[in-house]
Length: 157
Image 1 (cartoon, helix red, strand yellow):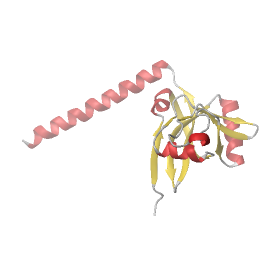
Image 2 (cartoon, helix red, strand yellow):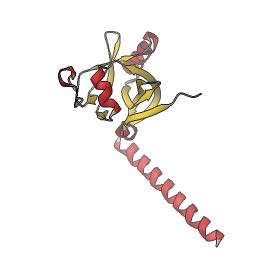
Image 3 (cartoon, rainbow, N blue to C red):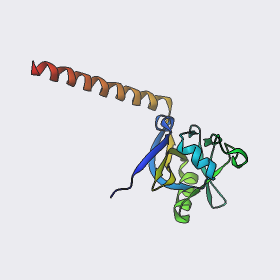
C-alpha cells in the first residue's frame, strides 16, 4: 500500500519566484503544540528558507501560530526549526548552495505515516522576464484548452 500523504501547507509563491532544480524530503523537529497547530493548518511557509549551520539543517521564518489550548507549552512562532536529514544529504546541499548560488526553499508541509515532513527544494531565483514568460505560457495553455473544449462541443452537435 502506498503511503497516504496529507498536504497541510503549501508555498505557492516559491513556484512562482524560483526555478526548482531538485526536491528533498526532510523530517521536522517540532514541539507537541506546534504539531497540533500545523494539523489545524495554522502554519505559513511564505518567505521561509533553509540553511546549513554547523552541520545541521535549519529552516527559518516558518511561522507556526501558537496553539489555542497550548498555554505555557507554546513556543516562539518564528523559532528556527531543525530539519532531519542524512549527513551526506546535508553536506551535498551545503556544497550546492555555496558553489552554484542556489537557495533552499520549503515547498510544502505534509503528514506521512503520522509524521510531519517538509518538501525542501534546491532553487534558483527567477528574473521578472522569466515570470512573464511563465504567465504567458499559462495563458496560452488556458486559451488552448478553452478552444479545444469549445470546438469539441460544436463537433458533437
